[in-house]
Image (cartoon, rainbow, N blue to C red):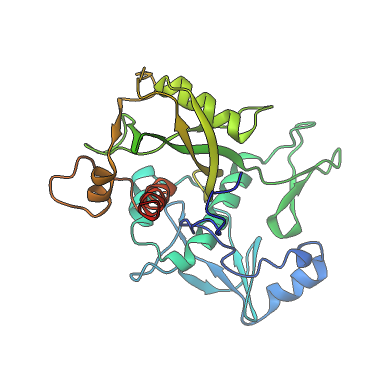
Length: 292
């Protein structure tokens, strides 16, 4: 699904590797042990179930190694412990508001891996408690030898357009006035295009065509991959599923531009910059402007 312009997709928050993940080292226990003993080794600090941030929004580090091997930054081996607690939802989004974008990919990787290990301690094949291997990037069962890898749950998040207007919706937990892109999990045996079409039909009652991929974003709450798309609606008549949404409506380009600019009296409160929905809105405005 090309994004239509032939250019690379826009960078979303959390995108990129962050550091050299050094995949080849994960399968070399002797090398990992050597890196753990390196006097330059450092490990992430954690607080309240989240990687800790310093006052500048950068990740906080302390000397030493830990169970999870994150990779190498320059010549410095980077590790992380596995948090035993789940961070408070409000604290999570409060932290994201000032998380430095350059540290965001590593924040996402460490948090997603920690979440996965906490939730998948036991073998799904035989029920035996499994062991952390490959520097924390998989688990192996000592009883049946099954190996389990961190899971990523694909989620489509999409903008539907009709004659220059954009469909956005709001969920009950949103702050007052916030509207954002519609989203839903990709189901078993379903393509990305089919998931976009189904979710827009279920939540807003519209049929669409020309589903186009825009960009993706890791979302470590607990371990999703947000797949950003746009689609063209065949009609602007909505049938909103009020069990999923509080409301859904169409917005003009001027209304979207005013919302992203934080203009007084804007028609809606946009999603925060760390959300891929914000990236999709900005991309849509740019594409619409270039078409004029």
